[in-house]
Length: 460
Image 1 (cartoon, one colour):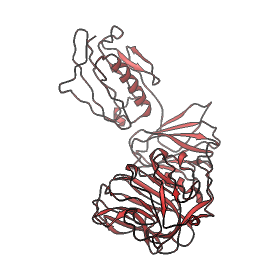
Image 2: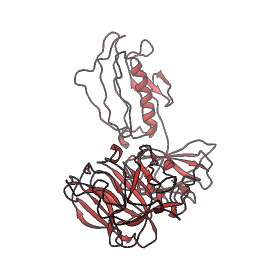
Image 3: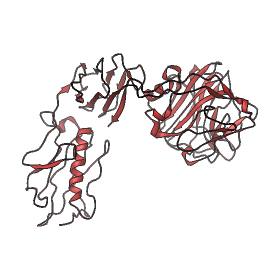
Image 4: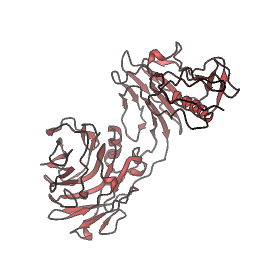
């Protein structure tokens, strides 16, 4: 059997795999073609939005020639019947293929040869519609919002396991959004409709019932200022330089000090911290360790001697967002707003109740509960899910659990002086200059996540 030779310059046809259906079929074809090559893989796995090449391989008497690959970038690349063509023509397949025939896939791992190309066809919705599901079959809709926004209303009485697949047909969701109306049921555990605003999104939702777990939450930690803090170390999981989300429940009066951070002014080891501007939630970020690039505080009161959920997200590309009680504050005051694309990798320890754990200052006078860090910028929906109408939730079943880098329950399951990290990274905190009584009882009651709700099982 001949070996594919693609060492020279190859002609290219660029596009993007934007449909989950198309991607599964293309990967089937890739697997089949790669099995013919004894020297290794020829085609890569196709992931969301991945660019690909059309490879023209050397033709020898017992070799193979790939004449073209699939097309899937924009509406004009689709067939007249809105069909995706997911076929590759080869001259030989060890006697199984005929020159000019098509290698076809059903998307489930089965490939076959045929004289004609296969298609995936579906109607296109360009006006408001209601999703219907029959006999558990996936309800798949290509949606065209090029002429205006469209609302897709979910079924009023879905069954456990029902799936809905909504695909941006024309690449127009950014200009004219798709709204997914929840129709009295929850989406991602929240009582809010879903707005889809990213071009070529492929949103897959599944309805689940009674799969959530209720978080038992009774304890919190009270920091009294004047040198009280918890040092959580500087594990690599806390050395986040790109996208980040930090979340906490806090009960504090005005001007509580720095609640938590990795921000050491000694030796220019500033990275980030959560603090206060009087009674407002404040976040400071630094790119090179020398001075703040961003200093934002909310217009919404967060420190009024009651429990509030605070959260910030940074996308690793200059966008910082602040949330109070699950809602983004779009009217933040930007005291400093310099451009930045990375967070400084501070060598200082992360601290709860102070600026940092290596050279702590600005000690907090506040009660903290359920503190967590992710190495991703959570979406507005995911942040809303953290708040869950005022009840902390089990982050191990949250939709962003795979990005969770640290989660301190702040008393629940802890034994003084250790505040256990409930993520997989063991970033345990050591309470310093504190007493066992600082682990207090009477925190906000825990809530349930993903209980009778539509959940994301794909976003391609």
